[in-house]
Image 1 (cartoon, rainbow, N blue to C red):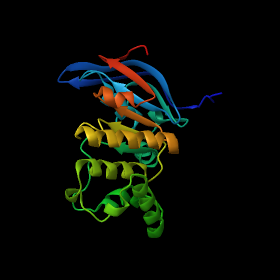
Image 2: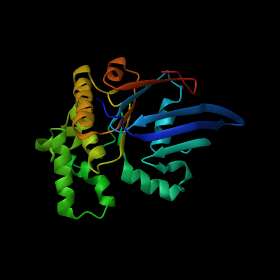
Image 3: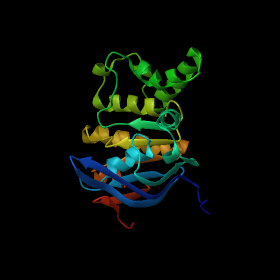
Length: 229
């Protein structure tokens, strides 16, 4: 019998608008749903549907106009900007379409970056980085610079950086959008493995139906409204 997992993300009546000149542009309206711990969720929808905005709100990058977001029992919509920055660094791992690696740093140094904000010693940081690079099968590339790595390898370094601090959730914005089909498949297989073997919770924005097929659950946004699943 399957054990029902507790929700790690709870979103209630979330709304967000932006100003364009003197005009208010609604982006999200009345969004309510939950994400279970260890779930792989794909957010889909046409451009301008609000899916990246929703991802940024869950990750604490942006703030909502109305509604609440609870992650791991913490109402992040009630946090100050400084509190939100601290919460984000401790609880969220980020995977971007274009990797966002520092070109002057090696793979090891790029993965180590989030740990420089912690109280870990140098030797403890090395253990964490080597473990993360081992998970993505890049231990033999740790001294290489991004320019010496393929696109798929760079994205694996980015994933290692995202998981190195053992965050509560991973947010991925079009993680395969800049990759060829084979590399994209490798990255999606790795993300599946993170969920299956490590119980990682992943929230992914994607336009690619093949990527969405790997997720446990797919949610569709249309003009800022969450469609019935």
